[in-house]
Image: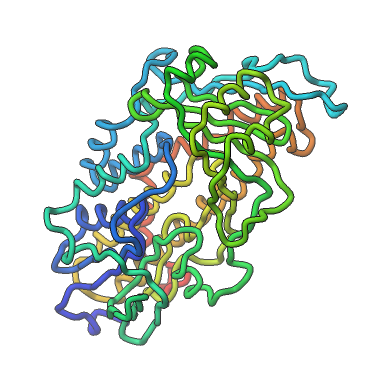
Length: 447
């Protein structure tokens, strides 16, 4: 395709999925793109925007990506992000790691720490870190133009198929309707329909159980403080044999978010990856842990049990300048580095900026934008998948040649987030834009 194939009508972009990734991309397109050139529309399967889960943490790179998507998104985030009282060092929030002392069953020998003894503390420059997912999503929705339904967003639109054609793409929906567009961008999560279309439903592109599940729930902060003391006011990771806990305040310090991971040989709940759980079930899984942890878990109300799945490395996130993948549908990772949602916002920042470089509604420019996006984003996001899975092993004393050695665990932890946190998002976007504007022969995969 070339300039001669350009049309005077705007390029129609269908965004499939209205979670954090899909909404970030929509906001990025609205902020960076000429509406006479790019016309986005988001299709959400549910009857309204919604997010499952409770707290979500955003690392410094994710906060910078919010600015790159739209400064108003960053401003909204800083209004709602948790600023609960907590220990600080030079104004920086503390991320504390401690150890849950479980029954020593002969695997030890290097252990000298008692329950909840401090292992290490890691600092970052993100003054605003945690939010409740639903509250953050509401703030994103508030940034959309008034009366966005119909013009920008359609609900109850579960995508069932995507057909790539010579002159565009047809998206089919469960209600029997279809839409002819110039491109489809899948933001539909780890069970993505769009990914299956792009990769032909290949088994090696399907989610894999990672050998862990997690209980998630909330506890009033005043109750958590009675059990953990000041530790409840900090983000804290508690390590143990075959399990670990993440705890951090949300709701401006009123609530403690708890995620308790356990190792498992398989997932016995079929296609349901989130199932109800009981407090008794949680306590049985952590019966050998220290008393403060068991008392904290006993406070959970209506916990859920989440299977931990990730994606194998995909060969590409784009196809024919017609289909692209963003967020979890491209690179779903376990949450052991707290970077999944942030990587989706990074994706949206890069792709939104690339689409903003298109100055005429020429489908050939979509190919350039998509290939540049894939080239810049794929290596970084695939690295997140592999390193996150290995961190889950580290936290539960299962990492080869490290095991439960506190010194080696500390050394690994203090460095493990540098490559994630330190990304210069603006430079990352400029790299993608530069690649987009290279001659076709220079852009790997350009057709």
